[in-house]
Length: 210
Image (cartoon, rainbow, N blue to C red; front, side, top):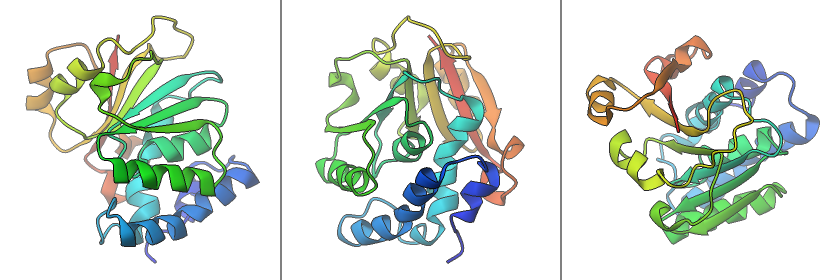
């Protein structure tokens, strides 16, 4: 196995034994569920901790959510970035949505198996979610401009974190054209500033304040 849990403790050395155990269960759980419902590419399942878990935790290098923060994960797929972040921030509330029901089944089963009590999952389109959240997170679901439109009315004005409430979007590659198309305010964070693996060379977090 090329990707092991050690890559998590390398960058997050202060996680608890409980969190370490929860992270440690993910490989077996996703291998099991992925064989039935394809939520992670077959070649990526061996690199789960680097390409999915640690990638998701890139948001945590940019924003350390304070207790009580409520976060919506749009287009979560099999639970990324929501599940790794819910493990890391047990005092925050995460709501994961996806328009494909079988993917939400995987999210629910994995969350239950590792004992996540701060996470809910819903088979729903983002536009139809009625609640407000402090942050909207996602991983390259679509271009930023339409995504912004989906979540425009879902961010609360109650600010108490270090970054302004808004979107924290995991994206990769050359974003110049996409960000120009978006035309709004944003801050770009390079994950290569936090993680040394080649995979993160072009990976970024885009923060869009509301």
